[in-house]
Length: 155
Image (cartoon, rainbow, N blue to C red; front, top):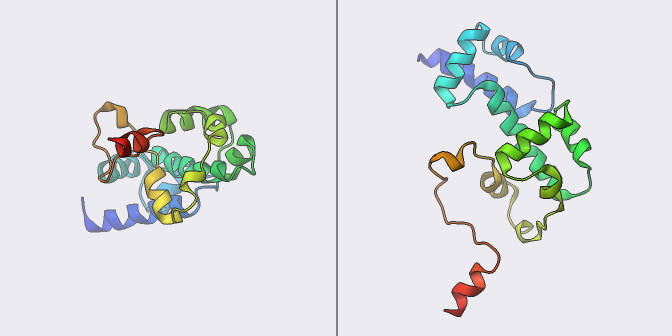
């Protein structure tokens, strides 16, 4: 892949990162990248390992997790705030990426993560597609689950 193509793909990816709540479609993103739709989709997947739509939805779900942790918006309000127009599609994709429904995620206690800075929280809570299919996990310590820290301290 040529450097110029990567620069144009990065421009489209930056647009998704910045304008995730806007109604973006593949044709509009291809236009940002100055590519045909087919070439854009193939090139984006080759460069980033996922389709443009998948990347955009991951950004939207990532932001939705932040809004749901706050707890002041309903699931429907969060769905619309991140640029999704269908609550059913949003809930399905959220559950697929996060492993639980948006309602269950919102209801869960998130107080343990309150002291973590926003950039670290974003890194640690980013949805990773395919973690159950053998894809390598993010480097770093394993998350401590409730009770495991006390059990380890008692030994």
